[in-house]
Length: 222
Image 1: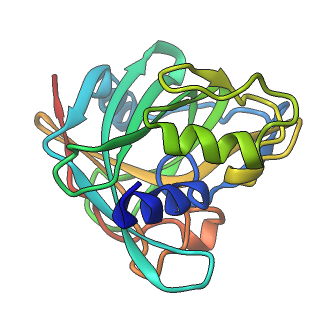
Image 2: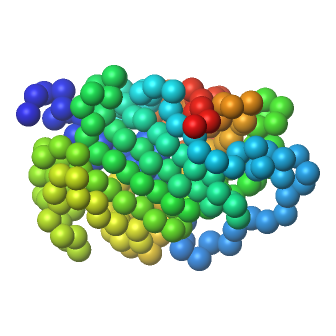
């Protein structure tokens, strides 16, 4: 396995879900309710399928501290009743030619009010309270998972998905009985969907204080 892929595999094991470490919410967390007309309009516009324009890069940290680039492509679907489906494919290279793993997340979006970055932006919490799956796409990643995430799972194999929903999954810091969660933002402009830009120091969106303060490269409508 080349050095770049080995480093990317290690990097993937210390990042979670949307790209970095995230908060975890109890499985019985109450969902936010009550929307004004503006948010209702945003939700209507948001319905449907979205995808990355091109492979994207994120800042994140290796276990020993230095920042490293993290490459991925996203597909996202917003559904009625604030449900969402997200698929992230992580890659070892900036062109997405060497995919390492596929992560699929399903859950709900909690709308928490306006965000000051731009008129129409909204604070949104993403909670994976329906599903969370991981699929190794290279043998090296499957081998690593078989060493660090074997308890409670079948042997990890290339192109074979396993659910980590509601389970302990050490590589992503998930604990049994909790849900993956991120404090993010959403801004829709025409056929472009913006989420929050990753903190440049590699911090995840794991607290309200770490909610993003800028816009990430957008998804486009499929």
